[in-house]
Length: 323
Image (cartoon, rainbow, N blue to C red; front, side, top):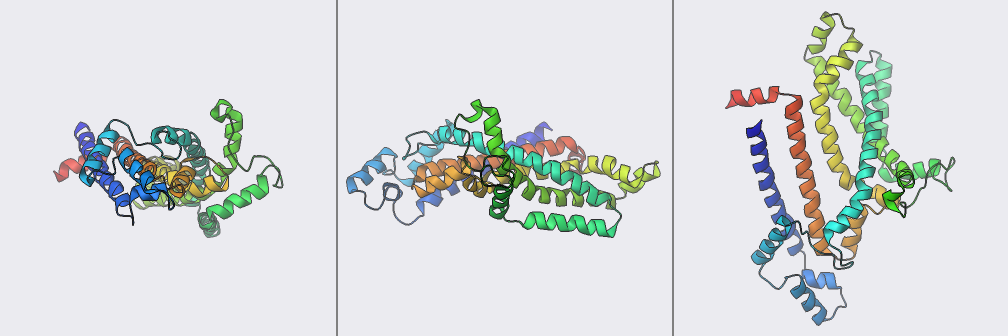
């Protein structure tokens, strides 16, 4: 296990270095000068030159990259030109909206998708299986904008039929008023939960059917279990590593996937902030934010590999035989 973790750490560091090069180069290959783009069309040459000196853009590209990499190693992801705040501080304040939204949405998706996926896998009726499949297709095909608008019309306070939850904005006091903050996330989280829940349902059903096709379920039934008991106990336990991987990677993908939801419900999260920074030409802040998101994706994948190995030790036996 220690060797496995060390190998994954080496790959993680190598991947982070490669991504840093890609992120750094992506903003330098844009037409025009980065400082001119940030300063705006009508900026004076003195303003452009001041920005270039302030952020070290007057230095050769290799030196710019090295200085930026050193700052990253010290936890400095840059400073926003428009607000004057550090990118780390901006990301932290926005993450306080995005991550609770993703966590609540993923919880709802699992609560919806796993039971429906299990029901679809254990069902012996062709009509029921077709009905479950139709639900999964419809739920996964609904655009996020349309689903969010529907939730507002149904449950939005002041405009909806039932008027249960706020449809715009986040609590002004933030998480110092947890009830208001949680209430403001209910509609967007429900929207995310329905859409992602359809995918979770399909993954769960597919994982259980793969286990059933391996003969393990037949062996469990030979020990006295019914097919339903074998699928929900033995089958679900064996499918757990695959499902954990799906849930963790879904969590990482939802960080940028909730961008439409955040804009629709006017939530000051990471997706909305990234769009705002791009619109304000705050390219150095965008550079730091993209690097933070990429690092987060890779770290989630690293943790998934470790959890997967802990849940399924047979993977280590396979690697030892290959070596």
